[in-house]
Length: 467
Figure 1 (tube, rainbow, N blue to C red):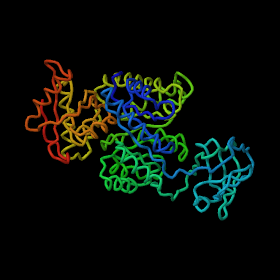
Figure 2 (figure 1 turned 120 degrees about the vertical axis):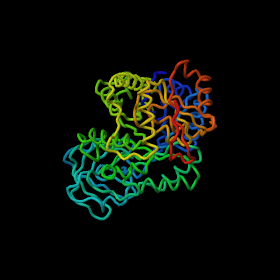
Figure 3 (figure 1 turned 60 degrees about the vertical axis):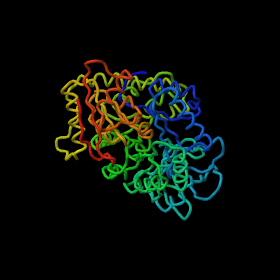
Figure 4 (figure 1 turned 90 degrees about the horizontal axis):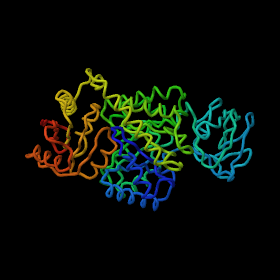
């Protein structure tokens, strides 16, 4: 397995759902699996979750499971199997009526859209490949002129840049799916089309009601979410830069800047951040990626993303294992070069750090100053390890936790590897940690190790550092 700090998320699908391929992807560097609840049956997801847990057990590698909720994505309704081609300049109607589409009228699933658009608005279909201009709307219908043609097929996504969509980010389907995920012990739940911090809080209440420790990832894919980014960051457990919908909802040229801002803020707040969408898109069909894709992935590593996510590349692509290997190699090479620059510890001198965060920073600086071989975080909830990770110190971070859920969740967090599940007696912590490291051949005689131990049950205070 290639050594790296940046984690890799693979979306599962027909190309990657067998235990054999799952094992190969783990050995190639996969750390997290994504289950896309826009597609699939509960029976299929249940079978996949069981396979993933078994593969994790057999390989000895913690694998986090991330459930990705569909959200209120506006879609085209039922169309003929082959779709319908429309040409530039044609006049077509979008309707909320329950029907099968024809050459003049296409059904849409979101009933409120005719009330939320106005003359001159742009409507994009299938990630912007088809573009319409609203001429006028009346009752259930939106009358449009085709600006850019193409083939309209069943359930293709619709975006309306610049228009605030009132649809609730947590749909009835999402609630049902989240409860299924909780019952099947997923580690993360990703919420689509987040608009504000309250969306995250509401999902967390559902999770708490069902007595789960699952953490919430806020998918940033709407302009409203970008505007409310800091407040969302404060309440979410992590964020995802969902570049696909962001690139449709906002001018495409602004997405790289938005990506950098999101990653920077996530690093600042000590929250895991995922860079997603079309990272190695050409590998859906081709065995090797383009130079531009390699550069894109490398830049995400330079920016200090916690993880990069593969979607179609591993779900339906021809080369799922090779796609994971490619990202692993990119991450490894970039990180080795980053280590040569001693100015890359992203300390924030103007940041008012709580005691716990400041202690993690001091432990990180101490590890650098004494040229430590590793820094060990003894953690209950993962907070201690996460606070050390945020400083991107390029010294191996070893996490020790007694909680299995925490062990799996830390698989998403930058630089934490290996992750060991073991109960530690805090009164004799240093000796116990030493024994574990020796038993697992993680240290050698003469190695310098910095040990950071959480002191309180809720892990809001870290007050113990040993060398």
